[in-house]
Amino acid sequence: MTQTAAFRPRRRFVCAWLALTVALVALMVVVGGATRLTGSGLSITEWRPVTGALPPIGEAAWRDEFSKYQASPQYKLLNEGMSLGDFQFIYWWEWSHRQLGRLIGFVFAGGLLIAALTRRVSLREGLTLFAMGLLLGTQGAIGWIMVASGLQPGMTAVAPVKLTLHLGFALLFFATLVAFLAYLGRFGRDRASLTPGLRAGAYAVLGLSFVQILLGGLVAGSRAGFAYNTWPSMGDGFAPPARVLFTVTPWWENFVDNIALVQLNHRLGAYALLIVTAAYAFAVARSRLSSGATGRALALAAVMILQACLGIVTLVAEVPLALGLAHQFGAVVVFGLAVANAALVYRLGAAPEARGAVEGRGSARPAE
Image (cartoon, rainbow, N blue to C red; front, side, top):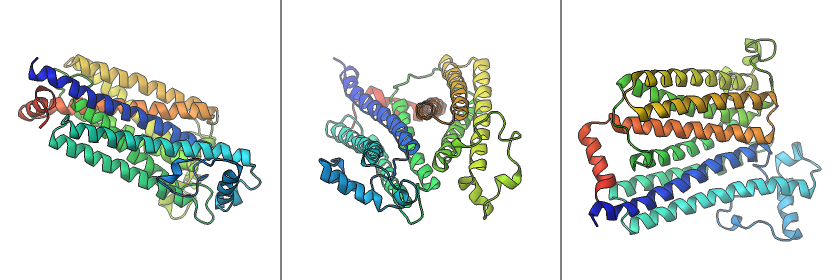
């Protein structure tokens, strides 16, 4: 058996471990969306990383947990009179969200430990993966900061900006996972490099998709999707008048707190992303430089169109839970495709000597 053949199973473990983590993070975004849509995010008022893994057992424990929630501003201002059964419904959503976060941390840390001890990754790769783990830990810490913001006096929900920051760090971690899988050759390799202009197009699609999901986070945080449930108009026209869009003082707070402007920005971002993705797909297909790049660009355009249609249906239907979650999952799929496409384009567009070194370290010899 050759050295390369012997090394392939070792790389397969790393690919399977990272692919599992990608799937769990995608699920985490959806469960997090369900937590927000059901108003469950503030049902657990304490952050107990270890002991919090156990849910209340027995009626006395449930009553104690419920009493803590009853002392929160959200209960007093929004849910006063809620029954224990209703509390348990929102509690299980938030508990599941936190449990999934713990599982992701365990899977990623455990997989990294196994990969390092069995030398399935090089020192440089191991340090990169360790930095990704720090990013994951930061994302979890931001999650508690986000929840704590909603427990302040007078608050009935988490601050939209902090919710969006929490989502943004989850997306960054998700992107590093997909990019590492692309580095390992998990999505194949193109034989022909795109032109600099087309590579810039791939990066533009990625950047706009990231920004668009953040704009969606602001929509979720401010519950802006429950207003202006018509399309393509918003109220009596394409957009509400300026006096409605900029009613909050100072003016810049309208971009995060004014539901009219928050929703309009999300709509405009969707239009821009759809146009740029369609133009990129058309340009790549016309260039005929790479069949792999063409297939990915066309897939991106197709998924983007479906995602836009789903967003419209979700809005007009006034954001039912199932459609809202489907729309959020669609956003993750679009973002994942955009990351994989940009990573492959970047890898092939790198200097030949650097690319050869990466390929040799990634697939042709054992990790150091």
